[in-house]
Image (cartoon, rainbow, N blue to C red; front, side, top):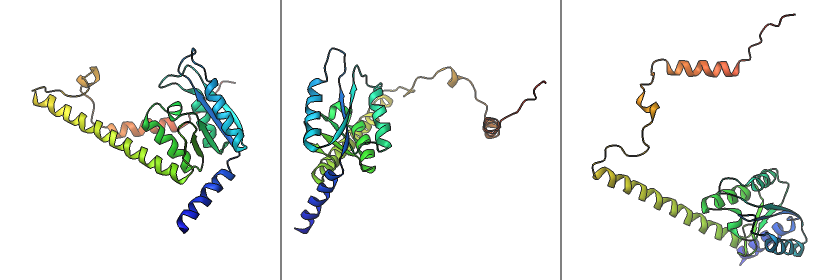
Length: 201
């Protein structure tokens, strides 16, 4: 019974310090709108009595999300107490990306809340859900690894000699092995040493 009381107190403290938050909304194309997401997040922030800034990501791709990267940089500087999204898939496109980002924020004592998913990773129940997500992501990675190994073994069993990346021009040329360590050390010293050239007066 005492343990449950401690958990409740911890949650209250987290909410007490959540004063300034970031609201992140994202759509994939210019034809889509972020207005519905903004309405939900602004309502959440106002109900919690928090001040907020809105970050809008439009026309994002899998590798290019500059607004999110800018927000992450500010979160790492602890400019916000938490980041709030409408759904988890608005923040990350894969479970691995989500888990890595959320873990980094949790380690920095920064909250992560998904309104529509009813998830708050600053709470005890939210942390439990996060651990379950992490376990499933690890399971997924292990399945991919096993299938990759099985695929390679099958290809080898069929008699193929070369498995993996096709060889390129650099692979066909004989590389210099003698003096490799010495050459790399010289390159490092040249990079670190500033050479002052004489000037003509």
